[in-house]
Length: 130
Image (cartoon, rainbow, N blue to C red):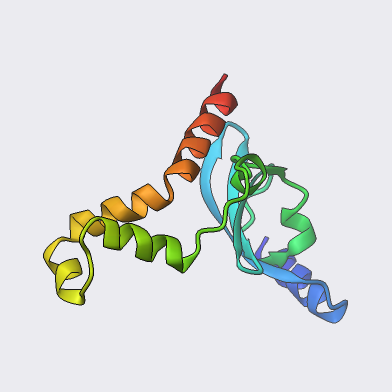
């Protein structure tokens, strides 16, 4: 198998096929959950083969997507730095010393700014379970 894998990567390099690094995350029955990074995104697929190491992108893309594509199910929302500033000021965080003295208050402010997104994630998760 190691020789076949080497030949596959070598062949991919010769044909300028895109190669990614893959790893087995878990096994589900006769299939494997494979994780790989493409661009700046992390992906997981269910695949019949335990793909590991450097493999052609087209090989891992033949797998069945695993998990929820959260970007597709959560309505778009852009949080601006001014949103954070407003919320931090509202809860009394004005200086670095305020932030260091009250890290839980800072976390609460972050949660308040992203609150709508959290609700959307929970609603989407519930819909996926049902």
